[in-house]
Image (cartoon, rainbow, N blue to C red):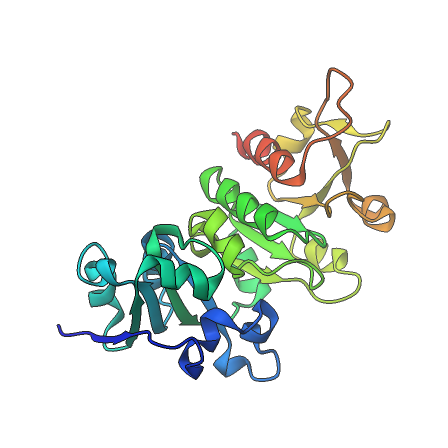
Length: 270
């Protein structure tokens, strides 16, 4: 298959706005969801997005990759524009070194209905206002590796399809179903779907994460809070359980991504 290779000669080309000038929020394009986009970086992430059925719009890559290790990805993407340049030019355009020398702009897939992804689930993660894309990516990577069936997010949190979140997740965002919770009080929604809720919070009345009561629950939602402040007090108050990871050496808590990995491992065990 011949590919539409377009060598970059000017940074002002409007076709490069996606990569060089549009913000993540502009790519999301909430006013026109049919034309919402995201950027996948590296052959691994692009490949997993393609496996999930995401539609490529264009690619940006080092020229050598278009003629070498990027050819497999190009063949999978079909006849879309492929912008190419030398590494130094791409660094100047994007402001950073490209991971594996390749970016792909893709159509944002429609978000599945929350009830649809929760119906078959036994263990889900709920992220309340988790803001850092690096943490979002790390949580999704742990969720995929450790048997979490779905991830639910509040609207105020970071987007799993942000470029950094995708990169940190190693494309695992496409391996775990996810959706957003309704605005406002979302706990009744989880209870109506048949989940007991476990708020991860360090409190004196918390259950240890090793308490067999938790693993015995047929359906459990593991609720994790934002960086720094953790879960909102009203969220903790209305969850069925408050759960702590025991700390030692005077450490007060774990980063939310690290805490998620511990919780997912412990609470998905038979």
